[in-house]
Image 1 (cartoon, helix red, strand yellow):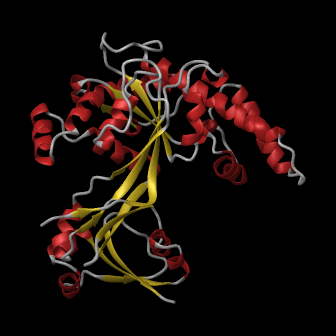
Image 2 (cartoon, rainbow, N blue to C red):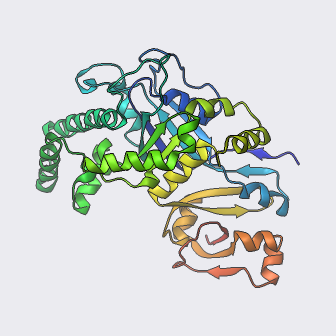
Image 3 (cartoon, rainbow, N blue to C red):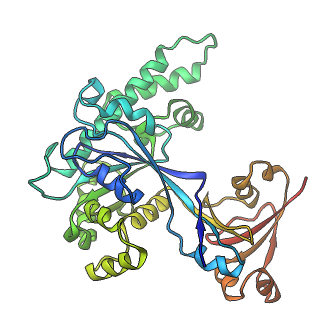
Length: 374
């Protein structure tokens, strides 16, 4: 059966990729998109325009559901990747090209730091060669960029005097001047609103780490990540091992030209369990507390992204905002039961379909049909 795959851009997870020049950011970006959308060259500042790419979230459940509901249209959830020019020390003072593009990742869901964990004399080495120090160089530039943003907000003239906002801006300014990232700062709810909705501060965003190594590093990723996390924690940086992935960007780019069976066969032969894209997206979902629910009918099967703990009306609102206020109920079946009993009719006959109300908390993999009033 010919499957028509289209992209679901609503509530797309967005990942802003940052790092020093020549750490493999653009190679990773190309691999993730399975095509050459970023210009890769072995010299500094090869990426001189921000690159934006939307890729589907790998989800084998959609292809399983399609024949059950007699559709050929699959709509996976998506991840938006934003790749910017390499940052260098002094970027906030105009060095290099990367800093001029930081505005393009201010609305990203998470910042992905790509650090070099490979040795290749043919690729120009930038930075110290120490992944921790290279990360700290980039983080400092992000702090300085945030400092400039806060300073601009403090100096902006306003007809309405807002004492609490001024206090928040002054606290942020003092904090950043000390060389600290905003995510380390304890803030009030109203301050969080200013940080997220007005200032879009880069160092307030959740962060993840991609260690770009070779195939050997990928196979020993647990050891590499453990060592990396231990060194970060020694610098008083809070990080979980689940926030880190080891990817061989060069290998991922080569795999992009393979079909699905060839890719699986190669990975199995190399002793690698899954692609870097799958590992990265899984880690990002976990870091941000995201999950998926599914809709399945003759028109299409589709995956939708929501946060853990989302109530049924709000999940319906991801499909269309009007569905929140007009929500009546949700017909729900687990993915496993839906597949085992061959769809809504069979699952209902076995008592596996439930009608849930406004207080229902969505579960990962729920197959749902929302009842919406007028």
